[in-house]
Image (cartoon, rainbow, N blue to C red; front, side, top):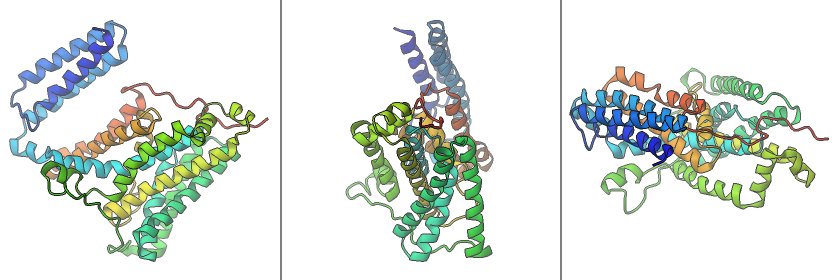
Length: 387
């Protein structure tokens, strides 16, 4: 067996060391978990000795976390464990929390595939949050709310595109500037239009999709039977965007601009036009994710309600190796972290406060590259100067 396979086996064993202590298994002793974790550490050490240092290190780290998780599970009451690990409710919550991240990650993917880093996803999501509520309130329909949110996100992205593409400004600085601009715009218009009372609570909300046949079928009914419309749209966008990027002429041109812009320009592809379009599209996607937060999930708007989700979406895109399916799985992982913190808070507020940091810890781990090395588009972040 190769060092790579041994490292993968170590990671799997480490995960099992914790999984056996939670429902439905609920092993109430530490010995099996410790034994599995020790074997995982040995597998990691073997993998490192065989040249797979990254994979072996991951196995050891996962084993250490698994022992800590197993200890927490064993020392918790059975009722508490069953309350937290109600898997159907956890899956449903994971989908809810992953939805805005998925729209943001897909938006970032489109922008960075063209070679423009979009750190402004946070601000574009925040614009979608406010203007989605405002549009739904003013025009009386969540559909118009999504339209207004998309326009607001696209216009903010256009500003980022102008500075990044046309003026060739530092894209990181421009993105952070966009975030602060969005914070000021949404805060001002919230106060101007709604005052101290805040947004109304009776706005038109994005509906849930009730799937006939499984809505009342145990696990599947609770987990998938009434997910929000935006959740299904986001999931459907993943194969659609994959097809566009890798099977169409437009996707090939977009990726060529992000990889070899000078070669693309030589054969007549407009680098500036494609980058402008990609950044604006990323703003629309991010704003739709923000609109889901306010019009589909919470039903209101508050200052800075995105709470760093744009940055988590950016991390999910990196974790997913700049591919739509990878971004989906990364968003589900981060969504699971948020769902876990939400469930834990319901039974233990003190421990729940600690678990609230879990999505951000996962973000740091992803960006640091512990879970795998990602390769960005070759021209990502590099302004193009036409000769």
